Length: 290
Image (tube, rainbow, N blue to C red):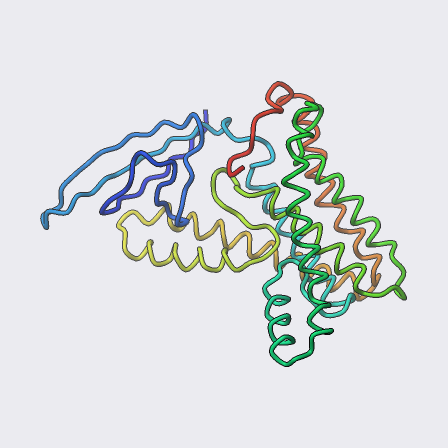
């Protein structure tokens, strides 16, 4: 049976908490994990606590598998490249830029222009609210997981985006992508207990830097190199999504969005199969991070 072992030594770790330090900066201990704690004293009289967490691979739901997050990261990159190349030259996957532009407009006294930025910000806020609020009622139905249903809804949204006429205002596509990216970000939170964003890259870049630093400082470099490669893989998939969307949009314009159905379809088929077979009796179980 496959297991995953996470090991970290620190000057002090609260062993009663459900979060320990790990190569990616923070590791949330899954339910059912085996935890072995050892304490040692260094020559300079500092206390070192080592926590070894062994996790059964089967403790993770299908929607938490890393390959799912890698494909979702590619979809996130596809959305970003799509809106930048053929839908107004903006990035709708996150809201930092809109908050900055809102502040700039307010600072310059352009209040009407500032009000415009409340539209994408509100769409993003609504996406997180809806995905958080609807998950529990869906779970109570015990038919399929919310995660699976969301992917199906995302595929439907992609079809609508692809069918929007080129003459339509760009804001329609932008707001729809704001909404769906927020839902994706809030729904898929941890890949096998590792916090993972699937719609933007900032945290992945940070985690690569953290992993490099820890690899330099620790004798056992393998877990940190592994973590670095994981986040680099996520960045690579995002970049692949951007490149493919730009190339496809150059040929098919808005219809290029249909190609996003390929990775989403693979995910949907796998999650739906799990819901109806291997995970049919544990549909009420929450993914880690929720």
